[in-house]
Amino acid sequence: MLSLHFVKTDIIDRDLGKFYSYIFDMRHTADYSDYIDYDQNQVMPLIEPSKKLINKISEILSQNQSNS
Image (tube, rainbow, N blue to C red; front, side):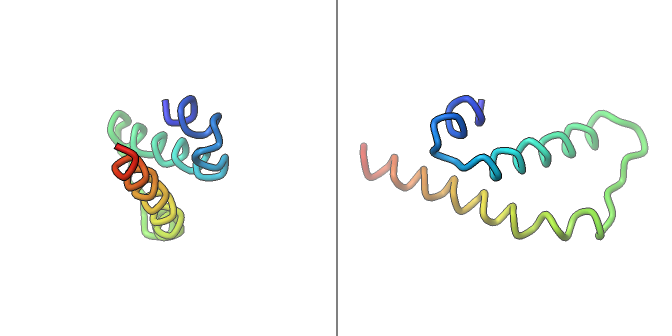
């Protein structure tokens, strides 16, 4: 739904949409697969892009609150 409502409408850029899909798949794999354990080398590179995504979502929410 993120892609449909935010990426395809250019509210969130394509790179952040792809990143969200990637980390969503990682979480899903960890939740439903046996013996999945992500290590520091896999997780550390995700911190900065995660911050960018969180900041963008916060920006969108702030805009929506001020428009209400």
